[in-house]
Length: 539
Image 1: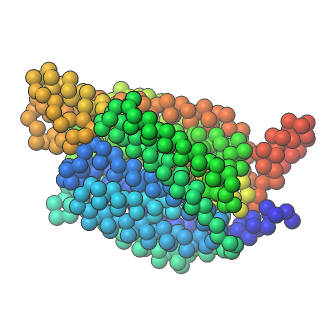
Image 2 (image 1 turned 180 degrees about the vertical axis):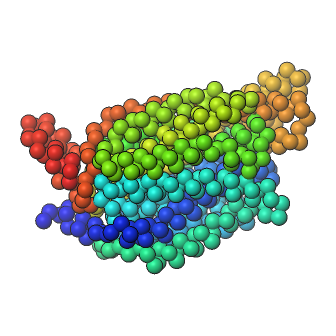
Image 3 (image 1 turned 45 degrees about the vertical axis):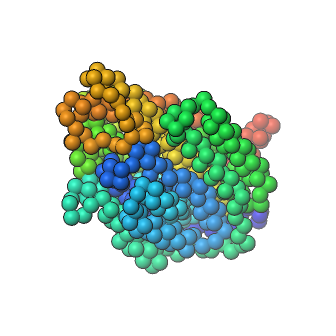
């Protein structure tokens, strides 16, 4: 027995379909809570930021802070999952999440809200990483597509229900937007109870070593980069000494993080994983998908409420085509992948649809017919449904059970990182473009454009005079189109990455691959037999 196979047998679980569904029930409920908390706020944010007298930058950071905390902590949760009880960890993540939600509901300023959203992000990071790890522990790669479809369905329901619930809460006078943060608490408590009763996994006990220096440096580098992107062009010029200092600082911190990770005994992001071609390309694609998943779509609620003057409830209903596409693609494609063992064609198709959807949404304006937007949003949803979970599946298929936590969390980490950078960068683009469009539109009316832009408060279009309202709606509509157009190249980057991934049929067992992709490529290059490739493909 090799050293790699011993942990595999300790962590792999032989379970029936019914047992898996019972064990997944609490886990999927926990994922639903995390997704609901994110989406329930999306349509409420314009009202929340207006009530708390926040700016476009504050709007961006309410979302970015959660994504950043999720990004920073996902590798930590993933590493802990390889070292200690996964059941205890997922329950801890839910507890942290509930605490952050309750505190966010009490926030009295945008600063307090952002801080509380960081706590929520820590819990969400655990739920995001651990859901993938626990599923991979219980289910063989060949069958995982089927169950990933269930996870995709839960994500779709949470994404569909969240904006609608959030819209109804905001539009209901006796509730108010603070209940957007409280609504997930009962579901989280129920998930804790269900997990305690249904989730039973073996625990591999060994000494826990957490790479705190690596986690700190990675978080600091990403945070500094995001602060620079958010403030550049508003508080100071893009080309200025402040920009030079912040960019240089982010690069230096990133270089130090790489050096620390190379020397750490248990690195947050193991550098050896990137010797695997599939993991490296999946990470590149995940960054691009993260930009699309979070960066562009998070501003749809703002577009519908400000550019089109819709209520929060109607705003949620108008995003249904995108969520419907995500639901259909994740469930149907997951079952097809399980039956065939082939996944690359769906990654390629999804990336094409994602790129096309972003590019077409770039033509969006305040007066664009809704039926056209519905088609474009459906393309984006289909693209996300085909790529998001299947990138994780492709990576998990190339590593042993003892590295599932690290490998899964690496993909989730970079997807969240792409989302955080995307929200911050596209939010800055939106703020600057809206500022320019407002200035142009108001100058034609002979009105000075004071207080507009990324630093000004978000407008309530229902209180504006008709001529001013038309200018504001046009500016936000045009600006929203610009950010989707800016996201299109990221979809193209994901397409290039997945085209270059070498497809390995999904393994039918939950043990280690017989040969890693690096081993197979080396063997083939050295003139080895094709039997190694075929055996490694089936596991």
